[in-house]
Length: 309
Ligand SMILES: C[S@@+](CC[C@H](N)C(=O)[O-])C[C@H]1O[C@@H](n2cnc3c(N)ncnc32)[C@H](O)[C@@H]1O
Image 1 (cartoon, rainbow, N blue to C red):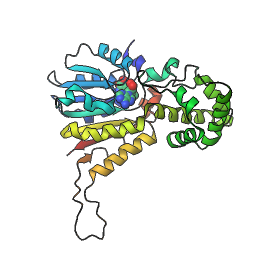
Image 2 (cartoon, rainbow, N blue to C red):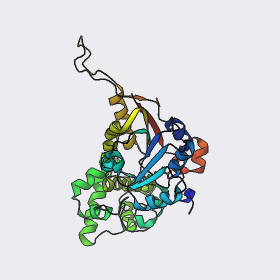
Image 3 (tube, rainbow, N blue to C red):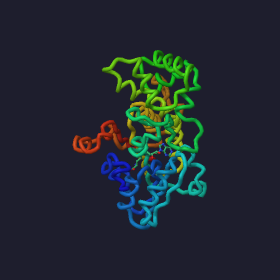
Image 4 (spheres, rainbow, N blue to C red):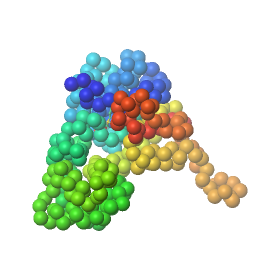
């Protein structure tokens, strides 16, 4: 299978043009997926440069490592980016000129009904990006209390009907365990009006996916840790696909790109806070109309880049 079937890389040129600033540099792709971005980085650097690609999904690592096997300066590792501090390369002090985070799931993961991310096709209610990880969407839907369900639907899906949906789920599972994406989609569909069905399903499935994979906590962890492994003037590029992720990235940039935060009325700074990064993209970069036409998944993408001072 060719990479284009696995996943079409989003904002490819924009990302690589601004991330690869040293042709002899060392790069970390934290979300290797089908290896589309990693390939472009490898093609942009000289043979003495290096790319380390990681993914929490073993299938992605196997696929991309095979695709990129002709590059001797590439290595793939199966690990969650929230745990990169455990990688041997990092324990031994590897520092990076650029780090890429292309968040969320790949087309390959979404389109495979057996992975359970899709509401449009029936499959096992799973949603784990990493099959070795414990809790699946099925476990959450069948074991979380109603208040916990409302909380995740509201917090991660920004769904106004969270309470009604959670009640319906609990009523249903009291009689029969909910095992498939189709069953869950029908339960949600029975609560909302036809006109809002697709939007409601997307929100609830997004919320569940975020909870299963702890996506927001892990994003915060990797952003914080990136400061330890970036060289001065090294860059981080983040492509996010929904407002909750983008908010975390934006807040991180705001927090660390500003200095003193003493109250205005203080005559002199006492906090001694100094900026440690500078923002490269004043506004997020979005996909062009042409890209959206070819790849509808680029529609919601937002690219932000910052640089370590
Ligand atoms: C949008 S895809 C990346 C696509 C890739 N840039 C390409 O060009 O093919 C996101 C990938 O990140 C992986 N991923 C998501 N969260 C992760 C995490 N916390 N740690 C490691 N990999 C993660 C997913 O398994 C998925 O393969």
